[in-house]
Amino acid sequence: MERVKRPNWVRGSCVGRGSFGTVSVAVNKSDGQVFAVKSVNRGMGSESQIEALENEIRILRSASSPWVVKYLGDDETVEDGAASFRNLHLEYMPGGTVADVMKKSGADVDESLVRSYSWCVVSALRYVHAKGIVHCDVKGKNVLLASTAGAAKLADFGSATEISDVTPSKPCGSPLWMAPEVVRGEYQGPESDVWSLGCTVIEMVTGRPPWEDRGGDTLCRIGYSEESPEIPTQFSELGRDFVNKCLHRDQTERWSCDQLLRHPFIASSSPPDSISYSSPRCVLDSLTSEFCDEDEEIEEDESSLAWELRTQSMRQRIGKLASDPVVIWESDGWVMVRDFVSEEEGTVSEYPNSIRTEEQIEETRPEYSSSVDIERAFLECSDSGGGVSAERKEFGCGWWDWAVESTGEEDFTTGEDFLFLNLLYFTAVICNLLWFINCNKLHFNSERSLSM
Image (tube, rainbow, N blue to C red):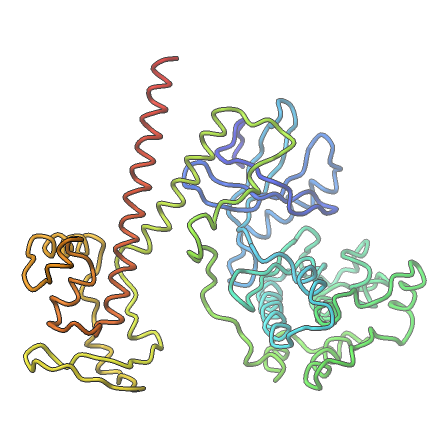
């Protein structure tokens, strides 16, 4: 366990608070990586909270599944001068929890999302059960969503325990999602997780817990009656059958995770294999105001650090757009409506509503693969001047002129290539501007340091 007094990361705003600690967004100072940190204050937290966090660290440290939240490290820090925190570093899941998202959706729930999320949770449970672990607290709040549509991961292993034939000393988990045998204190195993899974699917559809909370009366209904949670009427027939397979009161009759993955409700509902968290939707996407605490005064060096991290992130994101390999637009499902035959033939053919074959797509490559090539083409165009009308020379050799020179036609026939080259050119301009701003910032900081 790493122990440091001043961590190499910055704690942001709190995004979650539970019985076993708080979860905050954090950013690594060295590389700008965004992650989540789950912490327990040793001075104020109870012994059970610290034990639960240590239990989660131990389990996640050895876990490796695309459907279980990823362990990134752990440490102990001293913050605010005296407070000691035990910290667990986890991957940041920007989509929130299934419970929160479905609650906002209300009755208008996309069942295809329910299928996909259910597939992810069943896959996660299948993995942990194979490792001899029972999660013990499956519910919507512990299913985190990725930025990829339909992708989810199982989190919060603070209550998890090893599979054993020994009767548990006390029930673990959230009462409204507990299986009947857990409420009675008889048994808690993989079958109990499957019951909680069925309750979680109902929660996804309704946006509410599977049982109405009436205290001890509800616990008696769960543990000692013959009732099961009510399945919503708007659910499809396949969905109702899937939930029924999870909610048999006799745990020996419940389906296993292997069987559930073959159920037609989720058998073909797996999300994309790759889960991406840094889609370059905008240059400011990775760092947000979550790292600014309005209630605290930020020191000057911390403010400078935040500025540097934002600038570094912007440069990295724009750099990815301008670097190799570039996107081959013709191979990404685009419909070709105009095309060149060849320069040797000296003609231009028009193909209305035609689609290229796979062989043609393989032969197609962007003429310019980086911002350097674009700038070189622009300079060559500026030096040449041949074949450009006098009116256009008044304004310099622009991109339209370059297109006319290349094709020998006044008509705009290079539609896609023209748009693609413009995009890369302006990307290169933005990169140069950011580099210039960063140099001025570093120069300013060095002069200020010398003056001090």
